[in-house]
Length: 370
Image (cartoon, rainbow, N blue to C red):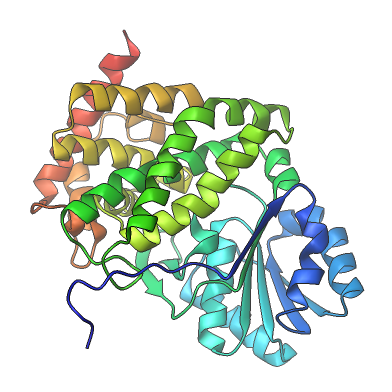
């Protein structure tokens, strides 16, 4: 039985980041196994194939390539797990964005004794470090969180690939990472048990705070570097904030309304073209409204969001002029049983979520006119 008040922190055993790191994938993977299934979508295979094949071959690791279907669904997990089982793989490597990596982690969990490697080519989410996956329906709506017994054995981030991607990816990652501190402090204040299985440690809370501070200091610079497709110290720092600091912060401190409302937003087909962090950013604003955040804090959030190009209004995520029932449907999904919205220190209803979305949108539009 878990001791009440136990504090826990979890993390991957190894994190590797730097320009050209994909060329060292084989060296690191060979310490985990000798037979790898690598999962990436067609587009990602187009620019990592040469480096991945050469690196794994050079390290004596057998390679089986799988093309990712595009969504982390149970059907896709089952398909890739069957392929990995047939190949006799002892390592599964997910390369690309958060959904491909979540699928690889879920496959590793399904097979039990297989090592898992996360190799993001973008800094768009904090999925690579975590011991969980977001599972979607075949139509792209949020279905559930799937929790695993362990974090990935290795997280490897090639910042040359991060810089080469469209800047929207790293900006979206900033939206996901920006929520980390706001959600962490709420969960800690409310004494909530985090995904790690216990209360937050001082270390994990400090990492969540450092994530926020890093974004505030270097976010706008990193956006410009990404637009120019160059690796700079600012881009390196924000890549680490988006991937490692945010990942450790959310998993060992907790999620709250920002991510719960993101999940609620996915019930609307209008937002399916938006990236994870872009939708989370709307959830963060709604959470701040729910908390009754002071004006200075709202303004800090909006000033940063506008500086890096994150959406702050409903229209910017495709929800211009929503009717009340549409917002209530989002609110019902955001407050479904088991949702992270219930980590707030007070009860949250669908009506409160709808009101917060409207109020946040109104404030963001007024701020933009200043």
